[in-house]
Image (cartoon, rainbow, N blue to C red; front, side, top):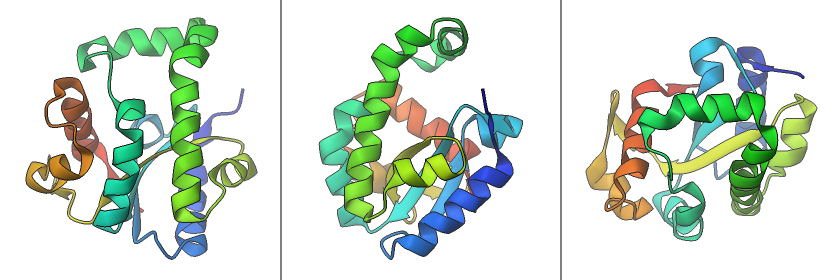
Length: 166
């Protein structure tokens, strides 16, 4: 199995920015950012607020975090040892997000990811989505519509703490 690296993420981010005029920035989070390698590349893609709102309106339930953050170690075990469960519950939602983001951005993310032998897990958010390492809840929650869902809000707060711009 191939693991995506920081260099893969950098190449993908540059290619995504080059191919889509709708992308004003790309930020990396997740295992590649944290450990230098991972099963996929997790990106926050900075776009116009109207485009972000359109993506979140359609993807809100695909993003909705069903497991609280305290259960993330269990998710890692499931990914490693029970890939069929991961496939059934997570990968289909990721694929749906990828396809819709591809349509909105005008870039085939699946093909782009295959060039680096990985997949791209993507979340569209507007510029100013965070202040430093803190989620800008006043901007983000109306766009995402997840303010009433504690686990998803905590997930966005976690992303804000770890994301780094490319």
